[in-house]
Image (cartoon, rainbow over all chains, first blue to last red; front, side, top):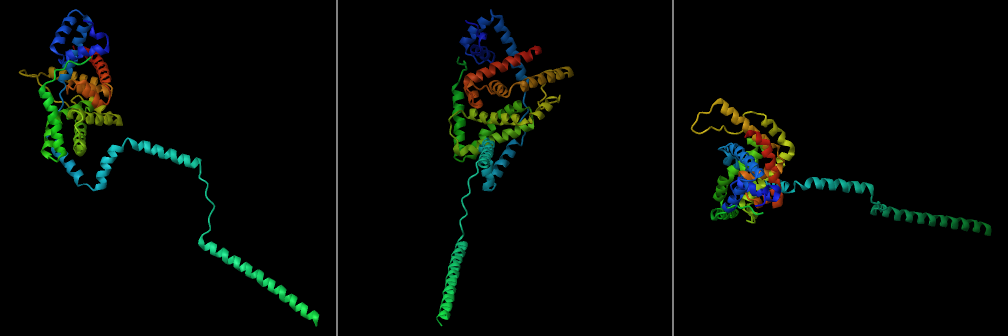
Length: 163
Length: 200
């Protein structure tokens, strides 16, 4: 048997063996090899120590009211207003995208500030247009009045000359 | 190289049964959710405890795991083993919690000699003070060794050792390839062997 400890790909064989998850046939072959390979024997001893140490690490028991607290949270979510439920679920889904969206917004604002959109010329409001028309009419009326005065003056001076 | 794990018909039946339960939850069957909760609550809490090394936080995160399972009931599809999906959620929550910087509190708790773990008594013998102290010291060594591992290596070791998950399941939980999982485990156990060698 080729020494399995030489590469990562084959070292997992030793790992499975020490975890007692290797099939009996390969276990027998590996044990024969470890009896003559000091490196593999050392690996076995070290790994078994790790297993023992990890076995000794017991986790604390789950608190008795775990289920009750969970069901309370489920009930609270079920009776929450629709917008809160939407916020809870959608925010969870979109949480990673929020910083990206904020960054995108900053970039967009910076672009707009750097490339201002030209403002179109102001268009007169209907009220101003009416005033302009009225002003033109007034102007025309004044021109007509002035012409009439000139004609009147001419007529008056002409009649006096004829007399 | 394939791992020589002996899979049994019982394990396959358990896989189908958990998925069947979840599909019943999808159909509105509340007791099926309770059954899933009862079965997987302790493994999830214990996994999270060993990841974050804080009992209160581990239960809070575990609550969030099952809350997300419940929220997902309407869209659940059994595309993977139920436990793979469950531990994928748990792993993501644990990694997020650790990366959010709250692990400072966890580091402080490592300095607490009593810790959060239970007191272990040697069967059929009275525990002497020296034995208890030795046990606490060794336990602290293990906690520190695990805590010192990079987060993904830590998660891989905990799923491999305590949940006896196969490489493919760990890969799906960690969202990486099987070869990446093998590499994670190889490096993690190499570190642990070196760190715990003095305990021989």
